[in-house]
Image (tube, one colour):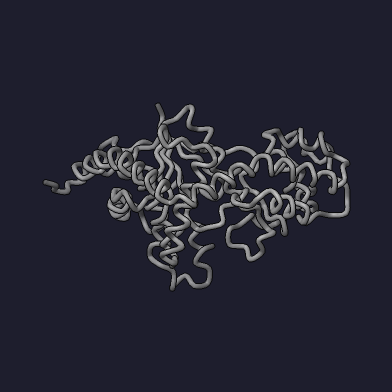
Length: 343
């Protein structure tokens, strides 16, 4: 069976975008793949973290995995720092990857901004750690959104260069699993910005731990425009995508329709056919009911799990044991290939 690896950073305030863009897809992959799901706490510390908050947020991500339907008996759930192979393999990949490759990584430029010289070295070599996350288990597939495609390409480059440098076939060339509709859920307050954990306004996102009243209130207050919802006439000639001019002019409408399509798991074409010409007030009412139906039970279960940290910690510890059992023989193989003496 093919093996999937994916991870989520424990940076707090998991929201609808995290669920629709990643976590829900993780649940569906369990049927057809051997799945390894990691809370990537080593990635989180590339910028400073409050230690107590980091521990709490690590448990929150694990609770979200469990509440959404990831089965810890079938899939491996653990936090990255409990498996030392991630850090060890990263150093080897630091010696394989080229500076030019990392200089092209757009996420470092975005995250470091004008303070590039003050950014941590960890933030710069973050993509090498991501490659180690995947290849420590010889994962064959990784679910990716638009913002991770470049990092996956680097993982493939590192695997190829390692294999070529040492004349082996140690690592597979990982294939992307392209995620479906609404992999980019936008802010409820500004449709030009991605829904974000760090946005100052809590009304910009629907948190996975929000209760029914909070979910409904946030959707009611979501920014709209004065026109009825667009219909099928908004489609581009390919009959699938929205016309660029419509998307630019009506970003909030397109975002809410995209969320509706993702929650109902229908196409954007169907969403436009069902609601074209409707007023936002009626549509928001239906969307709120739908969001409460989907997210409400997950939020309740997350809250319950977070009140029982010993259970969540036990799941992570068990997952780490199973992850180490997979990663350690692969790391030993890498040591042998590279020529590192190990008793």
